[in-house]
Amino acid sequence: MTDATRLHDPGFHGFASDNCASVHPEVLAAIALANEGHQDSYGDDVYTARLQQIFRRHFGDTAEAYPVFNGTGANIVGLQSMTDRWDSVICATSSHLNTDECGAAEKVAGIKLLTLEAPGGKLTAESLAVQAWGWDNQHRASPRVVSITQTTELGTCYTPDEIARICERAHDYGMKVHIDGARLANAAATLGTGFRSFTTDVGVDVISFGGTKNGLLFGEVIVVLNPDAVRGMLHLRKASMQLASKMRYVSVQFGALLEGDLWRRNAQHANAMARRLADGVRDLPGLEIARPVEANAVFARLPAVVSRRLQARFHFYTWDEATGEVRWMTAFDTTEADVDAFVAVIAGELRAT
Image (cartoon, rainbow, N blue to C red; front, side, top):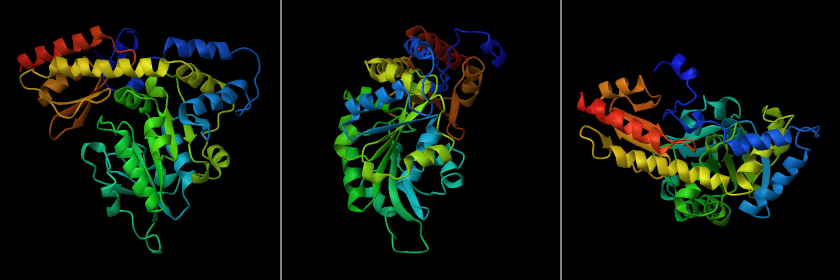
């Protein structure tokens, strides 16, 4: 199926990214509801005011919510608010912050990234020592923040204890902790908890909370859990071009997602479809599941010629050309029929090799 054909096929579901998914009907309905009459601009609307209460219910009484346009914006504004110009941020080499944001941390925020190899995509408290040094060295960008991704770029999920140990060690160093939470809902669904158990309750300072990958049209929220960890948030959001004039259309989406259990339903379904996909292909000759399936990502290795034939019909990404590893992502709107059809085609292509 060509890209042009996909454009005219509303039933087409690929496995490239949860960013490719549609908008959940309940979110669209909320946007339509907010599209009545006038509301004050730049966040002085009733939906953004309500959003503060919603986020405090999920994250605690000190939580402050700052809606922004996208995930890179949330990361950059959040990290800017936690650092000075001479500071640096420790993150995994594989992190989205390091590999997929076009150098925004360096170019826009002026933040040096200090990377660490992270098996399975996860930093450990012990690994921080490799980069956590040199605060009094004028020749070195001072490590000030540890940024982790939940769930990680490799589809793995930090446990609350793992994050607690990172927070304790980072705070012992005098550092702060940031979570890139583009898939935070998927992590909560995996862990079977709410958000607090692996964020507020274990010492996380700031979160980039994702909505786009979990059924929203657009928008993310910077959630400040520790007000003492940030400064200048309002000014930085504006200066970084992340302040929406019609903010009600961002805020009302998060209201629809978080006031009830839509966030959990969407994430649980996406995760379940990934498990179904992994189970469906696990025993196919010539295919290997490459990494643990802990959320809504499936990494597999298969012959490159098979991947190319599959990619002519289904959209997904090759993760590692050298090893033949690919990544398949599921979303809230991935159906069992989508998964089963994909599995059947994979099996057929492997037999034809």
